[in-house]
View 1 (cartoon, rainbow, N blue to C red):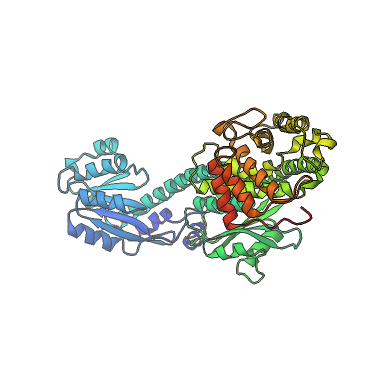
View 2: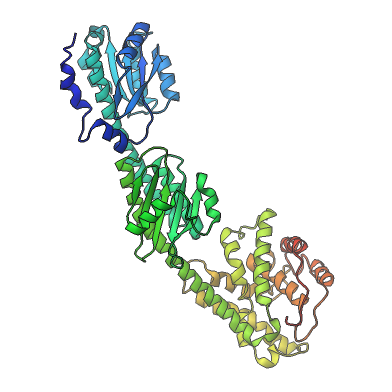
Length: 529
């Protein structure tokens, strides 16, 4: 028997820098049990092992014991049960080397390099220790006769400590991978609310739990936290502009904003983020167990990436607003001289966007019908007549029908508008509103059957955005007053559009237009149109 006093010699195995209670409350990743699998064909070995380990705990977590009575059964349990930390494995079971085979299958077939494996044998000579230790990826090799209660305790605690260290390294590796992937994804998000939702999803992934969370931004106007996104049980908060003063999360979030650093007070953990543009954000998460130091460190690293992404998102938004303002200014410049068009360009903007969306819902297979086109066509469409800035007043503002010569002058606005916008678009990398604007300006007077101008393009050779605006431009112009005409009745306009389907207009665009206006009929033309 082992000397009872020997227990004090082995206590260093569970005493770290802080006491056991401190480890349980501060360092635990979670409060789940340590899972230990006993694989042995001897029922008595299971009973004795359970008896010896019945009161064992490590860092405040007790053991959960599983039993298998053959190597095959042990493999099945390991295949279907997660987070097994230790396998106490008999060598000789259904075959003389069943335990050795299972040890190899754990590493090679299950690709489980984390679980600790301790071989136990009642016949040491049958599987020599040196050969087994060298040839098999195991952590210890014990004869059953030497495994007293104290030695078993020592073996189990040593294995759990090693398992915990490996799990920390693995979680760190996975967490850092998720931080890199998450930061990349966040830079691709353009909407603030989408960005915030993405942040919460990435935080939950790093914690490896389905954490409930809230992301707040400090409001300059009110001096209080504004809810930008919320998940889990806090999802209803996303409908609130401000975080309610009496909400349980408010004290921790307010403290983080006030003290300007993160708060880790389980169950309410608040990550404080301060960007270079002097914006303050807080992310509150409530995982079901206290965060381990490594998780806190990973989250702090992620918060640094969030701060940079948030600033970039803000700058992107400002640049986008500046681009939109430029487009609107160009459209206003063209409309300034053509007083008769009134709100024409705004109606074209709205209806063009609706038609593109309807075509998507209709399953249109046109390769040009991309998310990018659907996002940009509305604003780009208002540039369709920008070339009219070059049209002489006596032609542009003539209150009667144009002569053939005047008509030729008028038609030059399409080519001029495209040329102006193409030159501007080349100053911007990639596809922009100006890119689509140039296509629309140059192509919205082309006819689907090739009978239009300025190039006589036919069918899908005409850019899709121009085919859409071609229909919308005529539809709206007929509905509203012009210097040379009175507004047409709605039924006559629809009949006109139908009549020119497949000749002047793309049939798919016409179909989408008619479906849109059937649900949302245009308002009657007024005197200010």
